[in-house]
Image 1: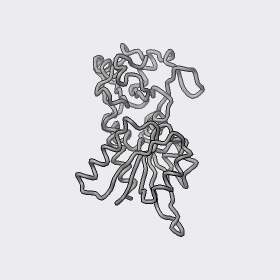
Image 2: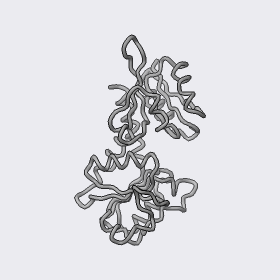
Image 3: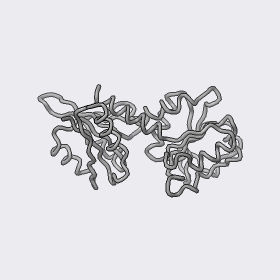
Amino acid sequence: MQKYGLIGYPLSHSFSKAYFNQKFEIEKIDAEYVNFEIPNIKEFKNVIKENPDLCGLNVTLPYKTQIIPLLDDIDEDARLIGAVNVIKFSKGFFGKTKLKGYNSDIIGFKKSIEPLLNDTHRKALILGTGGASKAVFQGLKQMGVGATFVSRKPQDFCITYNEITPKTMEKYTVIINTTPVGMFPNINECPDIPYDLVTPNHLLYDLLYNPDETLFMKKGKEQGAVVKNGLEMLLLQAFAAWEIWQK
């Protein structure tokens, strides 16, 4: 039996385990998916040692960056993003296990948002500067959309929410929330942008998917904007992870 799994901490709200085990059952794949909840990245070596039948792993918070030095190789997208959320296991010389890191978030994001983009969507505001924002930035860049980060605190590479002007809103017609603001149970919160300047030309994309429609999305919809949550991205990145493991 093949074995796949997820490393991170904590894993109580993991999507991957239920998704993949259901997939294996429905498609009659002789495999299982297990959670490896490790409180310290140093325990990763024990996971590998104690599970010699592992074929692949997903990586979630807080280890998407910390895992990189422990891998034999990473692909170009993961290197540019600086984060890994998929590890493929293969056999190298003399049967030694080789670990290569990938980032399927960028794949899921691009496939999810690309059908919504049109010629007016040339610039994007990325709300937040966490790990997911880096995948979004690289994905937009590959699709020819320029992006600027927005942060609560002044930083060299981004603007603050207070610096979003009417001219900014006119130029940046794609706005992507990569922050946890508005996630259940805090459903009455939303990123601090000037929603009265949102137009039907805008696309508001929220990486959150709980609730289905965040306040960020509701406010955008009220102004006539196209809105979308991150559920499809979540599913597409899982599809991509499986394809990476199988290739």
